[in-house]
Amino acid sequence: MALGINLSFCVKRWVTPALWARLVREELGLGLVQLSFDLVDPMWPDDVLDKVAADTRKACADHGITLHSGFAGLAAYTFNLLLHPEPAVRDASERWLTRAYAFCEKAGIRAAGGPVGAIAARPDAVEADAIPEADYADLVARLTRLADRAKAHGLTELYIEPTPLRREWPWTPAQARRLMADLAGTAVPWRYCFDWGHAILTPPYTAEEARAEPWLEAVAGDIGAVHIQQSDGRLDRHWDFTEQGIVDPAAVAATLARFGLADRPVFLEVFYPFEETDAVVLDRVRRSVAALTSAFGRD
Image 1 (tube, one colour):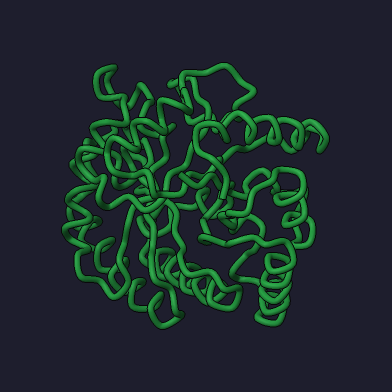
Image 2 (cartoon, helix red, strand yellow):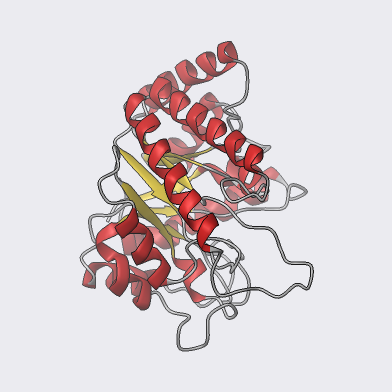
């Protein structure tokens, strides 16, 4: 398995390609990267995006880095995206994603993805077991259109990241299987970026459900990439592997291999308080990569 890293840990710190590329290769010893759109806003002016794309290509070539995909980060995830209650906001999210695909084309990235959206909370705060069917149908239509746009920008794969929230889609293995069936045959294939830490939370899952295996049994063939994080199983922590938690990298690697996913890239995805010092963040990421290398190898 190839170990890579999502650039989430670089946000507000190592924010230019020259900075993060050198750090990833020379400090972490990695050559596989998932670019976070917390570092590049697709709504920046075209001339700014063109320069960042050119700088990204050069930095990756200079340091021998492969850019696997562009991925929505925390900034985009803050919004409700393709499931916002206002149709005009959903339209704006489609434009945002289309511009993200255009940036990927210019930067030499062939895949993109992230969580797709969240419906609004109800006034009584009751969370249903599924989003309304009308919202689901609209989501499928938008994802189908986005696949057409991705193909026009030269992308070859798109990713949906399931999240453990009842207001988002999909949050269960059955929903994930249904969505893949309804997206079959799109211009660019939709696949899942499976986050191990999302699958093990209680709630929303019961103690029996809070395992990766139900997801892998349902959609292993549709998983194109994996996120790994340390977690206590209570909240979506995105801790690094200097923290104590319930995720065992060797067990993760063995389980992925058992389900035929040994060739999928595995990306460390961790977040830090902005107030933490840069030195502490770099040290903890370096130690986390070292802890994961024995289980997953390096690109």
